[in-house]
Image 1 (cartoon, rainbow, N blue to C red):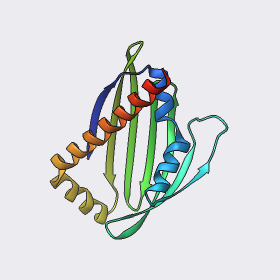
Image 2: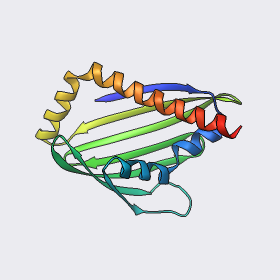
Image 3: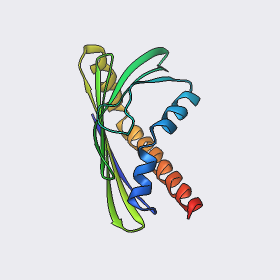
Image 4: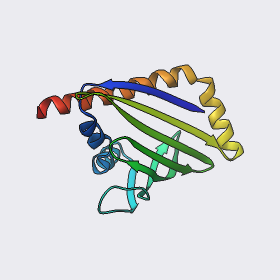
Length: 155
């Protein structure tokens, strides 16, 4: 199952990449939402190979996920792989400079089931695909707006 979207952001590519690669900020955000996250492989400078373990409640059960940063090409690309109880995920964030002050952010997320229960979960997600696509696009648009607002405060 694949979700893709893109947003144009009124900010330079370097600023946008700095925001989407603010791993400490994302860790704090996840903790505020009630999940646990622990950086298991750290690097002094962000690079491929960094990894996190996360625990969070979903559908009445505690879920565990391992996330690894597999590609890091500043300021153009980041790719992540995740594994969680029979479900593998891949996320890619591509940034393209449209002009000095405008950046296009392309995000794709793919889910691949590896067990029967994961297949059932993905099948139920496919039935709600339209609703999930709308929510995914809305969340990415909100995040893009936050990046624009942060940039406008520093300019």
